[in-house]
Image (cartoon, rainbow, N blue to C red):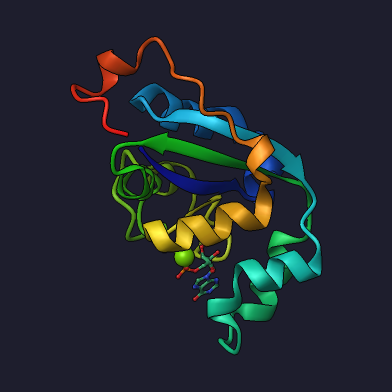
Length: 153
Ligand code: IDP
Ligand code: MG
C-alpha cells in the first residue's frame, strides 16, 4: 500500500478544522498509520519546503508553517498520494473544486489549510522527516477488504 504525508497547517488548527479535515480523509477509506502534533522548527520547515527555497513566497510560507502547532500524519491506501491530493483540492483555493477541503473551507493560497505529498518519492522523503519507523503502524485493519477489492502489499 502507498503511504503519503499530510499536514494540518496552523490556520486549520487555529480555526478548529482539524477534525473536519481528518474526517474527510478517514471517511473516504484512507487509513491513518501515524499521527502527531508538533510545532515545526525553522530547520524542519526549510527542509520540508526546500524545493520552494528562493521563491518569493518562501519566507512567508516558513513563517506560516512555523507560526503555531500542526498535526502531521501518514495516510495509507492504494494510490494514497493521488487520493489525498484530490480530496485536498488545488493549491490555490479559488481553483480548488467545491467538495474538496480547500475548495470548501479556504480562500487564500497562503492559508490553504493542508499539505499532502505530491509523489510517492516525495512522500518517502517527507515521511522520514516527520516520523521514525517505530512511529508508523502497519497492523492490518479489519475493514480494508471493504475499502479495497485487492489487498496488494
Ligand atoms: P501544494 O501545497 O498544493 O503542494 P506547492 O506548490 O507545493 O503547493 O506550495 C507549497 C505551499 O506553499 C502551498 O500549499 C502554499 O501554502 C504555499 N504557496 C504556494 N504558492 C504560493 C503563493 O503564490 N503565495 C503564497 N503561498 C504560496
Ligand atoms: Mg507541494
